[in-house]
Amino acid sequence: MAEYPEKTNNDTTKVDGRILYYSFIAGANQLFQHQAEINKLNVFPVNDKDTGTNLVATVRSVLDNIQPQKFYKTMVNDMAEAALVGARGNSGVIFAQFLYGLSCETKDKAALTITEFSESVSGSVPYMYGAISNPVEGTMLTIIKEWAEFLHAKRENIHEFKKVIIDSLFVLEKSLSETTFKLKALRQSGFVDAGAKGFVVFIKGVTDFLRTGNVRQLAAPSPAAFSFVSPEHIVDEEITYRYCTEAIIKNLSVGRDEIQKIASKSGDSVVVAGSEATCRIHVHTNQPAELFQELKACGTITFQKVDDMIRQHETATKRKWNIALVTDSSCDLSQELIDYYQINVVPLNLNFAGNHFLDKVTINPDRFYDMLESEAEFPKTSQINEQTFTNLYSHLASHYDAIIAIHLTGHFSGTFANSAKAGKRISKEFNKPIYVIDSKNLSGALGLLVLKAAKSIEVGQTADAVVRTLADDILQTKIFVSVRDLKYMIKGGRVSKPKGFIANLLGFNPVISMDEQGKSMLFGNTFSQRASLKKVMGHIAKISRQKKVWNYIVLHAHNPEGAEETAKKMVLLTGKKAAAIVDISPVIGMHAGSGAIAISLLLTN
Image 1 (cartoon, rainbow, N blue to C red):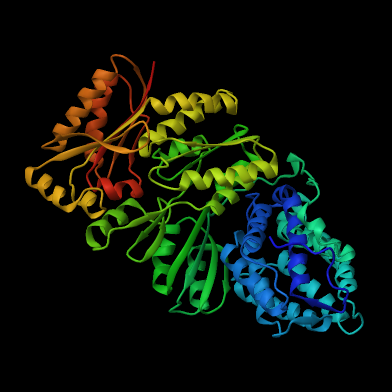
Image 2: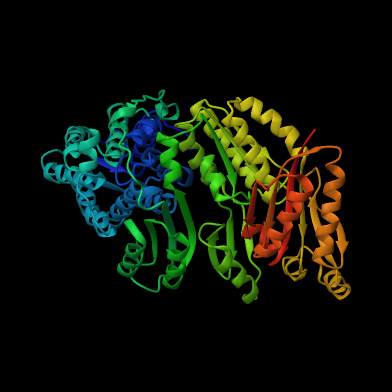
């Protein structure tokens, strides 16, 4: 962040880029402090308790990507662009669209009079309403519209920018109180609208700054002022659409109206923000993979985000335990176990045939393996960025006492490192412990570590105790992957073409495993998959004579028959059923290739 001057300029009849910049920081600081309160008010449009988190994520994206500019038009343009890219949730996207409208309606000037500012605010209102397929009054929309009307009415009578903004706070607070009676869900709970509350909190921060003009105070926000909501006031409702789905689409080949139609067929709470060249969509749906398949024809999808609103709702109102468990999508567990233990799974990024996908979420195994066979270009993966973890940990820390995150080996991805950075940041902000662990493994082996941690949390172990046990369990976790066809490893560069040619010529079927440092290694070579699995079974029989098998998972890459046959043999060998039989994650299956079979196990002394 830039150096802070002692005071802003003394000309209070105009607002320039620097006043706008510092006012935004002040508003953002207020949102940071009231995030938990806003989350607890969130009952509309879905009772998933994340409006505060989404607004904080949106303004945080702006602060992380802008610098103060003297020229007002430049500053508002930078804010709008950063907000559009980083917006999250229904309220976050609406707020971003408000800033986008503000930038479009702002004259190309270094500073604005109150008349010019009020006209740009009024002009931004249609941008918000036009972005929403079904605008609902009694929300952030109404608050901003009535605020704009007040500013417009006062533009000729009050020439001091500071005074008119401070006076407008009364109108905002009155409008906010009225939201309780405008929506059924709010009347039932007695709450005000969470998104509207967020906007009022933001403007309250702005007015506090304008009163003093003291920029240096912005670097040290005051302690959080939480206003907790009584549990009996929480409205428990069925969530019709599970996934809050967002995307940025560029190089549009159709109009925004067409995108709104496509999104509206898929679900509700549709917002299509931005311009005709670049838009950000928001929609609640049960079929994100199908939605993105249709949106591919509308332009280039450069970003996707999918949040599980059922998990968010459980986090806020139906937590089974006070320790949150997080992993990434390379963790292979059954959905039944993930749901029962309320595990938060963050998808890795997959880029395939020029399109961006979220592992296991916006591309399903059937389509993935079809594309793996038909596409000439081999898919690429990318790590989960720090901002994604920052947003998740911010939400979880609002509700849990501690967070434990267990990730795939750091030798394969920067995901662990980004998670650790975000964990450190949010742990400091919320003064709550966040443990981020490198499993030195992946797939079913990672799944077993997550399952063991979940069961430890279930029986009441402390977060410290769970983490200490995990350090030992990591050393006792094994995975063996029997590759049926080397062509995928050759395509992905895991095996050189000359070596792959010779291996294929000889009919080798390698078994891949992991060493203690989290690096892949060759466990053995055979001349058929049946022989390689027999070799693995023999090794498991040998090591299980010294140690017990706590549990195991059988995995397959589009080969359910082979997995079932392997699971039956493992029952005879270990005397217990597999914890899960699952289709391996696409980001792992792309290298193992279609037909691969894997066995992972966790040993105990």
